Length: 457
Ligand SMILES: Cc1cc2nc3c(=O)[nH]c(=O)nc-3n(C[C@H](O)[C@H](O)[C@H](O)COP(=O)(O)OP(=O)(O)OC[C@H]3O[C@@H](n4cnc5c(N)ncnc54)[C@H](O)[C@@H]3O)c2cc1C
Ligand code: SF4
Ligand code: SF4
Image (tube, rainbow, N blue to C red; front, side):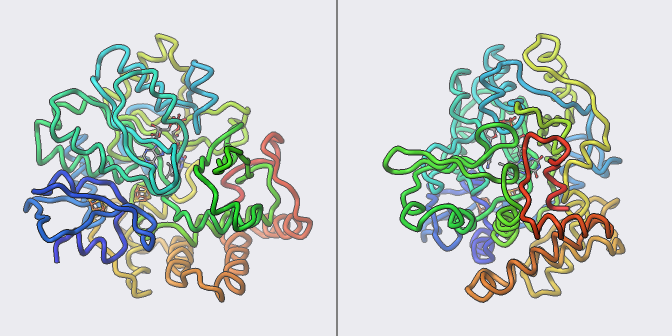
């Protein structure tokens, strides 16, 4: 069995498409309803190079950190970086349409306009969830097609051949696993390393299977309506965004996510995000895109809930920081320096992700087939006992699946136990019990009330 077949067999394929770069014949990808993702079609004639790399087969964090920064073990839990910023695009249209502050599209626009790159490798979500895919952009005006965070799986395979076959300079936008896969390719193909001017990475909490969203939509829509959805956007309207559904009859509907929503709906949303999270994502060591020159995420604090979005920016490398600084000087973006603690506090899973060895150990105890991850030495300890309960409950949810018994008898009690008792003292528990009893609404505009991660904590 090839490593790719093994990955598919273990349901760990995240559709990054990079195995295409190592295939000796044309490798096709097809949406698979069981995996709820596009996976490679393993026809008889498909052969791979011996040095093939798949990010769901093995991960070596120290090796990649050495390659990128000449440092095997980053000092900070945020990874190696030069500067930290909160910022947003000064183009009002870009900021309005973006998931966060529009930093990703503004950087692409800037680099294309300045002719520092010939094209950007990024992705679109304009058709059904089965068709979300990578695209190549060489016109700055095309950034209007790429806004928004796509939480269901995206198939990157379509544009991989551009990276392998072209000799043009490019920027690459992706999730941490995508940037890792690109970086491994760059270590094997120095010519690609030369052409890749910059990588722009998103923070990533993980992909969620679309059937999970359908389960959440059932709170608001009839079965027929769900069948007629033609496109799903997850971060529309005011920050941090509602879900926008488009239908066959050309109508649209907005559904609340974590703000402007009742407590019980939010519990259902949490069930969606955790029971339906992709297995590879539950085992992922990288939330803040360690190997991207510029990594961006959401500032999940009331301070930044201003109706317009803002991004947290980790400028990791010299070129990443220089780009952010030049764009600020030229007033393309607004940026201000922020503290390390602010970024750390904004990412709920960060410590669990860093200490991935604990997750892998719990997975093994639960009989879940994992893969090989070499972690940074600093985060290889297994004696962080406070991290075990979260790892256990997340993997237990995977193990349980979502059959009728789990759906009707187990999911809510388990989610509520997690919501009430996992973090916070007695005061927080009591406050949450009252909020659940009264099904109080979480408002996106009431700054006192809203703290995105506080809902999960
Ligand atoms: C799966 C996923 C998980 C996330 N988890 C976290 C998290 O844990 N913490 C956090 O702070 N933020 C998270 N984010 C949000 C992320 O921080 C924002 O999407 C990011 O800040 C970009 O916002 P923007 O306003 O700069 O760009 P926008 O204008 O919204 O443009 C988004 C850019 O990201 C690309 N993109 C969107 N979805 C994907 C995808 N699935 N794969 C590859 N590229 C994509 C688009 O092609 C576009 O280039 C997540 C996003 C995704 C897609
Ligand atoms: S390289 Fe990417 S697309 Fe190919 S099997 Fe691995 S995860 Fe899936
Ligand atoms: S959580 Fe990890 S594996 Fe999952 S999509 Fe994000 S970066 Fe990729």
